[in-house]
Length: 320
Ligand SMILES: NC(=O)c1ccc[n+]([C@@H]2O[C@H](COP(=O)([O-])OP(=O)(O)OC[C@H]3O[C@@H](n4cnc5c(N)ncnc54)[C@H](O)[C@@H]3O)[C@@H](O)[C@H]2O)c1
Image 1: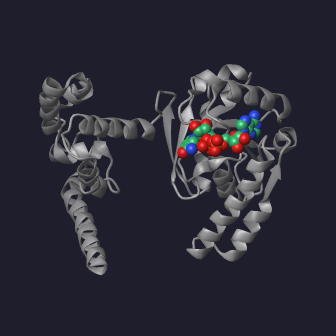
Image 2: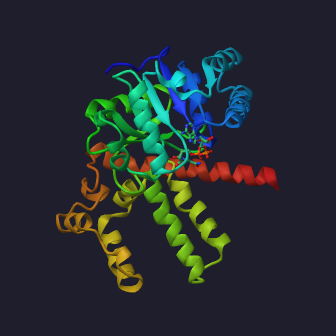
């Protein structure tokens, strides 16, 4: 199943907010793209949207004029889905978030596509196992979840359903990398990966507003100037390794006693504390750290924070 490589044809079904942006990324990446939609109006809008995205990329010198022009020439707008998908090596579905509609589309796709075509869904919430019964070759169905706006956001979640083959997953991740994106792979589980993390944070913020803990502005400010500063260099798991598992364990125990089970310390954390896997200071936490990494990790983090701090100061001076 080695179909990655520029010059291949991909089809994107659904030319709405996500579909047109995804089509544009494929085109800039050198693929021929057939973009299809039941609505001719959506296709017209998509054409304008793609042109505008490409102009922005050129304006910011992310791509050259020549590359932008070539990308525009690679996108075909086709209202007839069969024509759009029949020769495609990879078909990504980005239609409305409706499982019934999506299953109809996948069934149709399997009837008209080449036997080795890979099918991907951009669904934000519907699990692959809910869509898989629509087709026979379930090993070729995968989640490829882009973030909005697709031409600027780098993350792509590759979601493996219970029957998705490893080849299909590897292929999709490779394809994402080829497009300059950063793929992560996850199991078919509710909220996939990044949305679940995001929702956990958002729901806590909403609850804090509801409980009158702080104003919405202060909650957002707290997030921007704490988590927001660290997140570009470390996710929550490395963050815990820096802080130390014991600290987090204690915090979870206390918070769960006050705020309920949603803060109860997970077994993995309890096991790590018992086994002295406390993070950077013991060389083993969620991650393992060599002596060199132990020595350099804090310094590297601090250098990054200083850079951020001085950058912020420069920006606020300019503003005043
Ligand atoms: N909007 C987001 O921020 C976002 C982010 C990530 C993923 N997604 C997912 O991407 C998918 C699309 O979302 P969107 O926001 O682009 O929706 P959208 O409403 O902007 O676009 C959907 C398009 O699909 C078309 N369509 C419907 N049925 C079709 C069919 N049978 N064949 C061809 N085209 C058809 C519609 O005409 C419409 O143009 C959803 O599954 C959504 O969960 C959305």
